[in-house]
Image 1 (cartoon, rainbow, N blue to C red):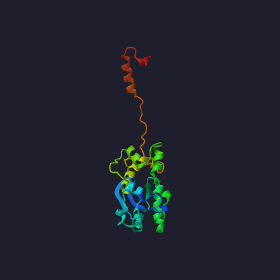
Image 2: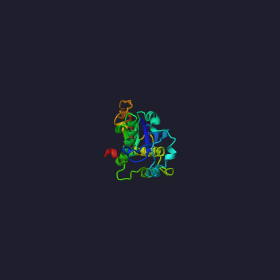
Image 3: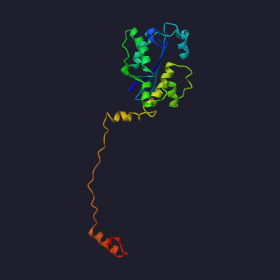
Length: 223
């Protein structure tokens, strides 16, 4: 089972208002185990960088000026995620931006049904908790010292650790037991059944026992 944990950074909150994607970060999981394979793209948004967005991720217009535009990396991004399930924190936000970028190139949209939203997953697993990425990292004792600012690849890596905790912890395979038990029969080894052994005493054993009892004072066997 291949999954891609991903995150985006943008120039703002709404692609319909002209905001664009400026970074994509992806981390690959196979059967809930990180493979060490990842991908990152910085993207020239072909517009200015609002100060509010810059304070979040620190990606300036000058830094992004020589980076490729989305059209130049779109096919590489689509090829990397392939048919994998997509994991994101507030997935609707990231999909809204990515699908706007893909639509501008007449490329197929990423369906919402293909994603797992870790905020929704956390609400199901730990009701009443705080659901920001920072709060979930602290809850699961995941190191946040590197996160002085948001960054798509960094956040995707942290989210991958949070996601693995939410689906069963960091011991690969244990979380799969419940999922597979309902869908696949567990083979049961056949056991050799032996015929019962006779336990009745022989005539010699009965005589020996009677002789022994006769030597006892008020034996229980004679009461």
